[in-house]
Length: 63
Image 1: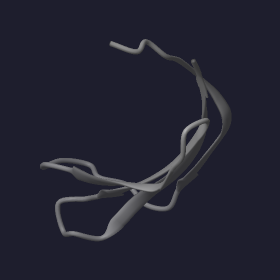
Image 2: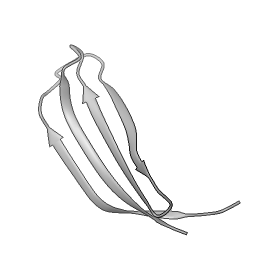
Image 3: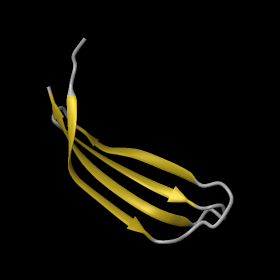
């Protein structure tokens, strides 16, 4: 079994709304899943299904 460590190259967060109460949910997508780098995007939705946060993260895979 291969073991890899990861480190963050870049992390960007945009907070575009609020949720005072109720449930929130997140959807995450691997935009690029290469051998040495991964780029992930996530969107957080409030109780009314409006976007309240956007995230993008670039990770370095250390084999």
